[in-house]
Every structure is written in C-alpha cells, then in structure tokens.
Amino acid sequence: MKNSVQEATSEATRLGTHLSESLREAASAVDAELERILPMPHGPHARIHEAMRYAIFAGGKRLRPFLVLTTAKVFGVPRIGALRVAAAIEALHTYSLVHDDLPCMDDDDLRRGRPTVHIAFDEMTAVLVGDALLTLAFEILSDAQTHSSAEVRCQLMAKLAEAAGHDGMIGGQMIDMLAPERSFGVEEIVHLQRLKTGQLFEFSCEAGAILGEASAEDRKRLRAYAREMGLVFQITDDLLDVTSSAEKTGKAVGKDGEQGKATFVSTYGVNRARDEARKLAHRAAKTVQVYDNVAPELSALPLSLLDRES
Ligand code: IPE
Ligand code: IPE
Ligand code: MG
Ligand code: MG
Ligand code: MG
Image (cartoon, rainbow, N blue to C red):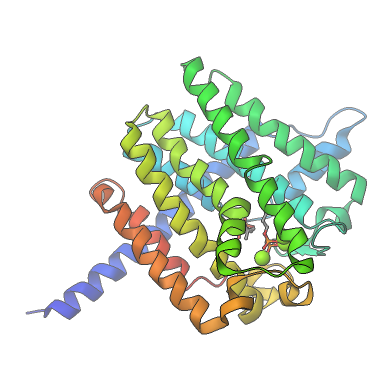
C-alpha cells in the first residue's frame, strides 16, 4: 500500500503533467487563432505584415492566452470568444516586447531565440509593428465574434486599456526605465512589477470571468490570484536574468545588473528572492483552490513557475 508521501508525490506529478499538457494545448490553439487573424503580407505595405508575423510566430510561452482560456473554461465560455481574447492579449504582449527591446529601451538583440524585430528589420519597422499589434488587440475585442454582448466587449476593451495604459503596463515601463537613476525600496519594486508585468496577467485572468459574466466575487478572486502570480512570474524572470543562459531563455541574460534595473534580485539577492517567490506562489495557489475541480492547472501554475527555465 502506498504511504501518504508517495500518494502526494504521485498526485503532484499527475498535476504537473496535466499543467504541461494544458499549456501546450493552449499555445497551439492560440497560434492557430492568431494564424487566422493576422493578415498575410499584401499591398505596398506588406513589410508591416511580414514583421508582425515575425514577432508573433517566434514561439513564446503563450502564458497569458493560457490564463484566458483556463479562466474562461471555469465559467463555461464558448471556445471561439475565449480564443479571440487570448489572441488579443498575445498581440498586445508581443507589442510590449518589441518596444521593450528597442535601442531606446532595453536595447536587446535577441528575443524568443531569434534577432529582435529592429535587428531583423529596422527600428522604424519595429516601432510600427508594436503600434500595429497594439491596435489589432482592440480590433479583435471589438468584433462581435468575440462576444455577442456589446456590453461585454466594451468591458473587455476598457479593462485592457486600463491594464496596458499609463497607470498600468506603460506606467510600469516608465518606472522601470527611470529606476537606474533612483534608489528603490522593496515596496516601490513591488509597485513597479505589479504595473509592468502584473497588469496584463490581471487582465488575462479576469477576462475569462468577464466573458462568462461571472460574479464580482469571482472577478476579484481571479485578480488577486493574478497579482500574486504576476509577481512570482516577474521575480523568476529577474532570477533567470542572473542564473540562466540565452540558449535557455531565448533572450540576453545579465542585462538587469548591467543596466542598473531595480529588481527583487538586486535588492534581496538570489536566495531571498527565491524564498519570496515561493511564499507568493503558495498564496496564489490557495486563492484559486475553489476552482480545482474544473481547472486544477490554475492552482498548479504558480508553483511550477518557481522551477521554470525560460
Ligand atoms: C517576458 O514575458 C516579459 C516579461 C513580462 C518578463 P514572457 O516570459 O511571457 O515572454 P514570452 O511571451 O514567453 O516570450
Ligand atoms: C518587460 O520586462 C515588461 C514589458 C515588456 C512590459 P523585462 O524588460 O524584464 O522583460 P525581458 O526580460 O526583456 O523579457
Ligand atoms: Mg524592460
Ligand atoms: Mg527587457
Ligand atoms: Mg527581464
């Protein structure tokens, strides 16, 4: 007879396998949807379509689409609407990476294992690709195929605008760029990371509930989960910058220290940053245990991020 430790271990392995499969499925489903949505190169401006496709179809973990699809599953949302919102958030996220890599920002040459858009094309094209992907995200959400209710579509657009805009992701990017000239305490770093990374995760998790016209309580719970999980994600991104390699992550490492970025790792060091991430991951997992019967991959995700290699 198995003892309780063995049982817990095999349950954890089963959950881990289920999560990996769900992540793979979400990635291939959203890729197929993006393939349908992204225009094929045409006309005298075909270069913009080529560069948009180059940026989008370069791999990428498709974590934000996974969160949209999983939270949508909790509320029984029709697949087509969930896939379109997943495609919209991935388009917007990809825009943020293209601009983040520009010489005037983090100045990176490698992204998702290949030359960044401004290297493969040029800077002007990279700026335009970002603009085009950002706009495309809202075009996708506004279409009636996303949800039959105009009220729901408006809510999605308003929430995404809030998450991505001046008091959201862009606000976070602004603080991130100014950080090397200032001295930051932990609270300020948490604030910066909640904006620059957390906001898109919060949108991704709430999106399933908005599509499913779920209760205010569900929406609040999913945002709380995303807040903790987003921090785990950014702390582990900062850890990878000092502990991993370009081969594994598909992007340059060692840049945060070089550019004087304010991170958990620069403040606490690797070990304490890891401990903080672990605490947050457990908290996040607990928040969504109520959905374990329908979507156990939601509570499994934060803990798995602790061991991620890319
Ligand atoms: C990178 O995001 C940018 C951060 C917010 C740290 P991801 O690590 O999700 O990038 P992709 O989409 O998998 O390339
Ligand atoms: C990027 O954060 C966050 C956004 C693009 C909004 P980072 O600068 O840490 O991301 P990487 O490390 O280049 O992927
Ligand atoms: Mg950056
Ligand atoms: Mg960067
Ligand atoms: Mg980083």
